[in-house]
Amino acid sequence: MSGAQRATPGGARQGGAQPAGAPPGATQQGEPQPGVPHQQGEARADRPFGFRYLGPLLLGSTLNPINSSMIATGLVGIGTEFHLGPGQTASLISVLYLFSAVMQPTMGKLASLFGPRRVFIAGILILLAAGIVGALAPSFGFLLASRALIGIGTSAAYPTAMAMVRARADRLGVGVPSRVLGAFSIAAQVTVVVGLPLGGILVGTLGWRALFSVNIPLALVTLAATLVGVERDAPRPSVPWRELVRSLDLPGVALFAGAVTALLVFLSGLGDPAWWLGVCAVVAGGAFVWRERHASSPLIDVRALASNGPLQRTYTRQLLVGLGMYACMYGMSQWMEQGRGLAPEVVGIVMVPLSLVSIVVARLVSLRGWVRMPLVLAGLAFLATAVMMVTANGSTSIAVLVIMTSLLGLMNGFGGFANQTALYMQSPADGIAVAAGLYRTFSYMGAIFSSSLIGLVFGAQATDPGFHSLAWVLSGIGGAVLVMTLVDRRIPRVAA
Image 1 (cartoon, rainbow, N blue to C red):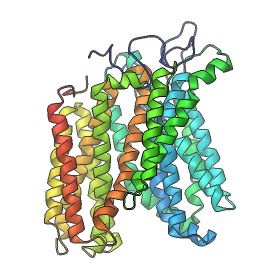
Image 2 (cartoon, rainbow, N blue to C red; image 1 turned 180 degrees about the horizontal axis):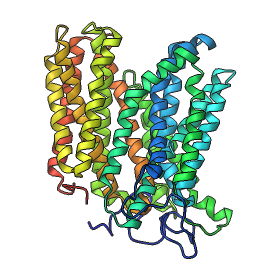
Image 3 (cartoon, helix red, strand yellow; image 1 turned 60 degrees about the vertical axis):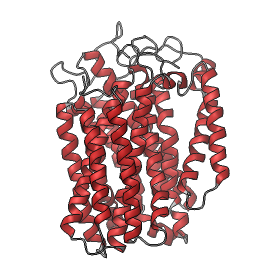
């Protein structure tokens, strides 16, 4: 399928003028407009993605994962102040995941209607409000509302950033900006390194409310950098409110939210399955597909997605990579403490190579623009990690454990960059925002599913037999990623 014919959610074909689902008269973001003066942040031809432009986009895209990890350090203090148990405080984690999974593609849809920079800035302002609500929260309910707002606001960043990068690259004719995509992968890895330590420092010095109030300066810095460094969206003609509301596809958004929420809650409790939730997810998903097939301005163009096999397979690979990655990351850390008997601080040190190797690998492959080979190597790294896990026991040396976490870092670095680049290449410009948002939704599905998987294999205690069972599951995931890559001839060898 040629670049001018690629289909994706959010848009039927590349190369056309008007984004699918956009109100009449809307133009593709980033195209030069007659009579529009040179905007601030416009790229030089020899350096289209300088720090001034890319910095706020990268910072914005890290705010969701940072908030996801930081909160873990404050749950005990929050529970003590509001007299709540661990189960209730853990809802602060799940509410952000749920809202993020639903809002990522929804924000991509809004970007196609209003312009990605406008939606990016709106998300920052929502995050600013969320930080204020959380910092001043008089009750636990306000904290839940703050986390929901954080999920909504930060969900705007990644899909709109991908849309702005794509628009600039296409406008300047620079091809696939593999180094930029690598920077997004590296930024995601950095958050794994700094999220928990940053949360610990904030809670230890300023108290748990700092986990919410830190979003205020982060939002203000990101907002200021965006206003200075990122050019405005192209002007859009005024559209009647009735037509605009129709273009938003609110029924589709509601059905998508219901299907995703039911599915994620079902996946998070597979130890004691609530089968009725699984049925609700299937029914809502079926209704969503029916609605989108008949909607004139769908949230997700399911017809286009159904015809885009390469993109479907990229989503599936990302779900598998996310499932394996999070299951191993959290499963390894639990087993190292309970099965291997290491102190928490030692476990933290042993896990550091995971992120460091991921960062180095993502940088190396992005400089060369490799896509297909990193996916093959990701599958092999999965299998190698599983082999080491099967042979591990309570007397395994720390040096061997470091090698094991480094192998997992190889998998994460290879798979994260390659899947993101494949997504970029398989999605036309007018659908990249929705496609990128849906890509993140599949990642969240894998992350939430991983918590149930860990519970199923470990039970009440992270023992050697449970860890070995997790290794066998990981080997199946790695084998699936490897086979999917080897048989899929549509995966490009390099980004071009």
